[in-house]
Image (cartoon, rainbow, N blue to C red):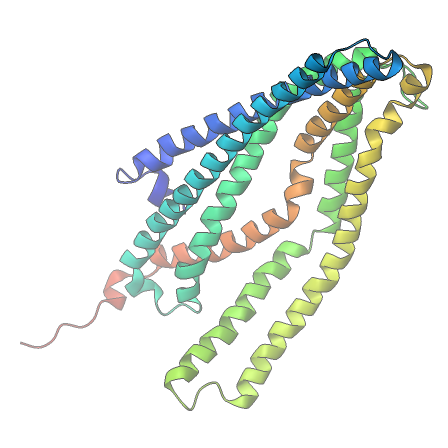
Amino acid sequence: MFKSFFFSRRWLPWSLLGTAAILFATWYRVELDVQINEWFGTFYDLVQKALSKPGSITTADYWAQLNTFLRIAMLYVTIAVVLDFFVKHYIFRWRTAMNDYYMAHWDKLRHIEGAAQRVQEDTMRFASIMEGLGIDFMRSLMVLGAFLPILAGLSARVTELPFIGPIPWSLVWVAIAFALAGTVLLAIVGIKLPGLQFQNQRVEAAYRKELVYGEDDAARAAGPVTQKLFGDVRKNYFRLFFHYLYFDVAKWSYIQFGVLVPYIALAPTMVSGAVTLGVMQQIVRAFGRVESSFQFLVLSWSTIVELMSVYKRLRAFEQQIKAVDPAAVRPAATPG
């Protein structure tokens, strides 16, 4: 899964240089996000000034602020589109490296149930999920590095927290506490999902294999057999649906409540009028960025569950390459 791409001379330009390019572009997008956050503060302070004192700003001032945002946003969109295009090629190269490795050992793997699915489908899913989670994880770290000092500085403007009172770096502690609580909550609630996803792929593979055999052999894929196999698929899916039901209740309730958290934390400060509208926008936006970074596991849990399932299947697949004796699967020599 990794050696075929990251430790291969053939794929070195894509694996190392490509990864570096993706990380640099991700970092630059975070820097642009910081500029947008600063723009929100300046713009909303300008709006507050205009509404509270008519005639205090000019039309040119207003348009200048909008032009500033447009310049940053267009650059952000351009980098996002180019990066997304590059990432698609990056993922396919990773899949190609895995595919070439597995096909080079196909004689050892072809007898394994679901071998075709693992080579054809799981390689693409693994590369895609790993790349997506990797970028999200690195972006979370970069966002923390950029926005955590901003949020810590803005916390100095917060007079006190509800029910707690004034504490240093108050908003930082609120973000950490709320993200940690959500991570622990969803990890407990979703503890059964990885095993069910893995089992789901097993029953799907067994059903698919029988149908493939039935294409060439009339004796295979008979009614009773397919009914039983599909019954296993249905049973596992229904169990999966049930467990995702209460998991989604916990996940979406937590996410929606999170929208209110910065406003709850700012309640005494807002009531006392200690901050301007622009500062409030900066605080809420910076808090959201820091909070979402700390919530990486919460927001990515469903994807992580899928990755664990794919990883288990490919790991078992690769173990067969090491376990099978080449002499045991090599065709017997034809007598001369």
